[in-house]
Image 1 (tube, rainbow, N blue to C red):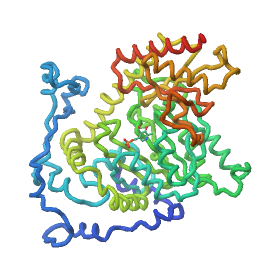
Image 2 (cartoon, rainbow, N blue to C red; image 1 turned 90 degrees about the vertical axis):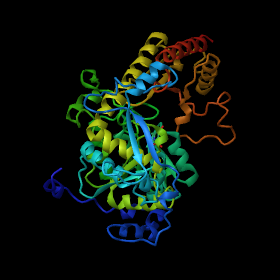
Image 3 (cartoon, rainbow, N blue to C red; image 1 turned 180 degrees about the vertical axis):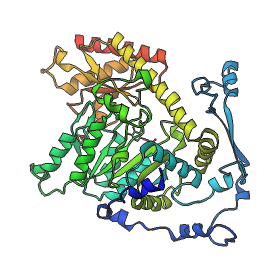
Image 4 (cartoon, protein in one colour; image 1 turned 180 degrees about the horizontal axis):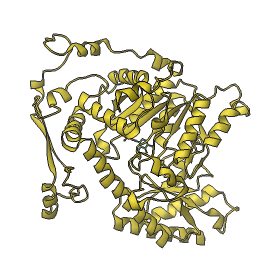
Length: 508
Ligand SMILES: Cc1ncc(COP(=O)(O)O)c(C=O)c1O
């Protein structure tokens, strides 16, 4: 973006009044303040940095997928079993990345710095790569945005919440949502208000209605209106729903009208399935032509105020064990998260950061990474998704169960049509769902019970790990299946078993 364009963009609004007591109290670590003087001719006898010669790691080498112009991730699959000659052969086609012990002219990173203590933003080379990626992918609409590294979205969410929520606050969440988010909120005494969803995720109309009429129901009387909403806009976990551009615009409009902060947790963003001729033409997808090279515009990219906290992670694009992600948001919030990092994780692991920096900056580059995301990540999950869906259509009687076709992510959210069950109305829905879950286990196919994503409070008198003995929420007539992990043959077999389990339960 040219400097001229940057100057025309507004500055972020002041969101200081949204800070929790904890967020407002976070200050820069005076010890870390010394680090910025460590340049040029400075000789430091300060800090408590261990001497790099005591790091027993001479270098760090990894064999990675090559992403040069000649190479395609599709033709260089990751070897799954290095003990067979065929797989070893494939491995030879990888590219070698080395992070040396000390600085070298042709390297962006060395272990002596990536394994050293550093500031809570993460190491420079990786943070700058992520920031450039965010700038080109999302073209932020205000000037003073920034990026800070996290140890993944779980870490980032917990820190975002700590920054803007106090005990006793409420936040809006999707009607079915990622259980870890609720498990993060509950012990902190932060409540959640479910917002109705449809095939495009959180309904902007329902969110607006809740906000417009806040205080009108007995349970809301005297309770402060929530000021934060948590959303998973792409390939939502568990429903697989992806917000259309219009839905995203509507959500932003409601957030502006009611002055809400949005936490955009987007781990499945790059698992979007509309590739070229494969592009789906459902209602929600038609407007994708206006988007960024076919990628959905994010809430962050539509935010002119600095009210969106965007959480990205390398967990689904590279590997969860990297434990590296990045948060994009207004610079004030970035500072607070940096200070929080400095008293918790300090930074993501130096091994991960060093290797990722060298791989992304020096080997793949921005273009290679984008090509990898397109040609590998989204293609792989597109084919997987299609396979599970085709198996479902072949082996499951649609009278008993169905799903809305996902256009991103890893999940099929299966709706069980209990109204077709001979005992429907005579026994409770959760009893029938429990029967189905037990039958699935008996038939050796496992899916996640829908109640696990429910926002309803879990009864305290039942052991939540006793999956065979209870099904909490009567409205949770869903099961979540993933196409991310099993082999194609296993998916086919699992869905065959699921079809049989449904048949058996619906016969009784
Ligand atoms: C919605 C959502 N947020 C966050 C995560 C966890 O991400 P990370 O591995 O970056 O902590 C997941 C993983 O399943 C997820 O589905």
